[in-house]
Image (cartoon, rainbow, N blue to C red):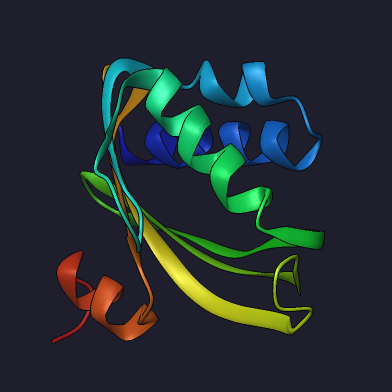
Length: 128
């Protein structure tokens, strides 16, 4: 089942990167809980959409890249990078981070973002 979970997260990320937000959200369960670095948690697909839009709206020239998807048995760890130019500050920002996804019955039921990749890997039981 774990490879199927990776495929669900990959499909959602592919849709997000293609700017197909409705399709990206379709991989989330209707009652998903999304825990970003700041604020939240956000509940439901509309909460995920709100959080994503809020984050993207903070930047000009926003970009997002998937570095790696890691099978963690009942979870999937996404290592990613993003950045842009802060709209209010004009400062160029780049970061590396991770998100742990829980996939239940073919949809993402929980997602938690970690600023520290090593901490995310440890939380997923992959290091420590």
